[in-house]
Each structure stands twice: as C-alpha cells, then as structure tokens.
Length: 446
Ligand SMILES: [Zn+2]
Image 1 (cartoon, rainbow, N blue to C red):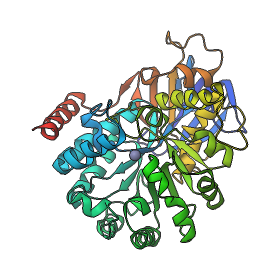
Image 2: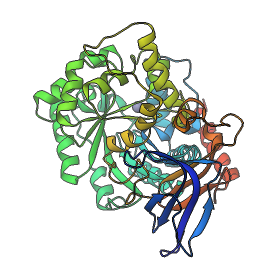
Image 3: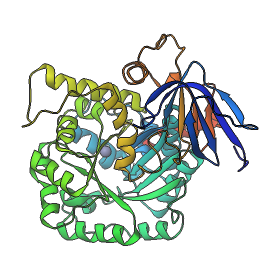
C-alpha cells in the first residue's frame, strides 16, 4: 500500500470489530484506503481495490501493548525464576549499565518485531535504559525500523543508578526535550513520545512535580510504575500525587497491584489509566496480585501489557489468558478484597483490555483499538482454519482462550502489510538473529 490512492478490500472474514456499533459479524468486508479504515460491512463494492481474501480468517483490530521494556528482549527469560527484587538487581544493577546503544537497538528491534509477529500493532516501549542520548536514538531507530505503531517511553539512565532511583533529587534528563524537538516532534507519526517517569516511589515529590511539568510543557503523556510489591504500595504514591494535585488524564500507572482501593478511586476520579501485566503479576513473586478486577470495578481505564520478556512472553494472547485466569481464580476461591464485586469477567472483557482498553490507556483510543471507520488500518487476520482453532464457535473466545502468535496470518499497520501468510514482510531474520545473539553475548559476558 505505497500508492496513496490504492485501496485494499479485506473480503469475507469473520470480523471481531471491537466497535459496539458493528459488533462481531460473519462474512464481512473491511475497506482500507490511505492507511485508514473506510468501511466495515457485507458486500462492499470497491472497483479497482486490491482484494485480500479473508474467508477462513478472523479479522481483528491490531492488539495494543500498553507497557513493555523492549530493550530487554535480547536477554529473554533470564529472570523467570527470580523474585521482583532479584530481577531489579539483575537487570538494573548488573546488566543495565553494560548496555551499549547497539544493545538497545538490537533488543528493541527484536522485541518490536516479535510484537508485530504476534499481532501487536501498537507497542508502548518503556525504555528505562537511557544511559546516553545515543541510547535513546538507538531505541527510536529500532522502533521505526520494525514498522509498527509505537510510543517511545523515555526513561532514566542505569549508570549511577542509586542517584536516579533512591529518593532521587535529580530531575529527568533534558534529553527528553532534545528528542521532542527533533526525532519525535510529530504526534501524527507512527512513533510518538511519552515520559517513562519515576514518580514519588523513586524520586522526591519536587522531582515528580518538575518531571510532570516538563512532560506537560512538551505536550506528552507520562507513564509511572506504581505499587509493584508491598514496600512500594506502602508509600501510597498515588495518594501523594493526589494530595499534590498532580493526577490527570495524561497519566498511566503500571501494575498498581499493591495500591489501595482508595488510590484506585483517585485514579478513576482523575482519568488516570492503568497498564497491567497479569502473566507477570501472577507469576513474578513479590509484585502483588493483579488488580484487574479492582480496577474494573472502580472504573479505571485499563489495558494489558507484556512488561518484560526476561520473565514472560512477547505476545498479548498470553496476557489475555492470564487476565482471564487471574480474575476467575479470585471468584473460584471466594476471595473478594473489594466492596462491590465486579460482574463476571468475560473473554470479551479480556479482548477489550488488549485492544480498545490499552489504546485508551495510551491516549490513542480515537486512532486505534477497534475496526471503526476513520481509525487507522491496524488490522490482524487470524487463521481460523488452524487445527487449534477450527471449528470456531465463538471467535472472541477462540482468540482469548486458545489463539497464539502462530495463528497470526496477516498484520497491517496504517494499511501497510507487515506480515502475510504467517511471515513478517521484508525482515531479514538471519540478520536479526545475529544482532540479538551478539548483543546477548555482550550483555551476559562476565
Ligand atoms: Zn514494567
């Protein structure tokens, strides 16, 4: 789809639109023109359009990942049997300072392409390895080269780490201003900018105030980890920010597993979104139980995320399954920490958290997250004829409860085909493997 006039007709799929006005409909077409969804419905006439046969496919909005430390992808599964504090020591204390710009590039490119391969068309890259300006540039290069839609979250350096994370009195680096003025000035581009901030858990309240003022001055959103484990939860950082008048709809908080219901209510009151990663919250000792049911019950806009591949999977299918299991298991053991238990959590709810919910959490909900005319043509085709899915009786349940990255046949981002016939388009996989292996060797060298 390089020709601006070219149209693409995705014909005859089982469309899971995620748009309440369109719903889930069989034998339905999606018309794409100029990178935008123009029409969704049966029997669309589009003379001259290229036709993509979607019979035997489920047609979904591209999945949206609200938080991932993509820089870590070249040392995958390094920390699967560690608890949270040991993971911090390993990735931030020991390995992070060794990262060269080329390691950030290799990890980011690998992680971003793995996301695309798994049908994730929007990725929020939480890049807290900003050891130099070149590290930031390398991450942005990796995201751009991968070709997906991405939000680059500019974090802090891992050299002189205690100075940055122990009640730090250092404001966020002004490199954020350089990137905003240069590489990521355009909010309509495929890769945009966000502040990956420290907040009151890692810095002082004055620094939090100054960092947020910088982000707001630059017109970008801010994401902050909150309440990951009891010690952080006990700091009640959300309440601190509420008292300081700093909460607002331009904020996303990550995990929030040990924040109180009162704090989650403050998030809802101020339109703060939440990015959760239930595979990690259920599997990584020390982080605290995933708060999906509490967030939902209290009305906090919530999206799924894949966090770190040093622990978990690259794909959101895994997170949707974990979300369903985590939330249902609370019901099964009769536990309720929560005054008004939310209504049953469905497969459709899990799907929403991986699409429109996550898009809303990133402030991109009017652009992506559903197959709605006028939104970007970020579209995924799942092969419903694959043996693990066929015959499909409920397409949403098939996607949430059973599908995996190997079922992803086709991926479009802004109308551009990035995966077709189960293979990424125009990606030199041998070069990618070499980059990743060389980087892994450097990072893990003793
Ligand atoms: Zn994280």
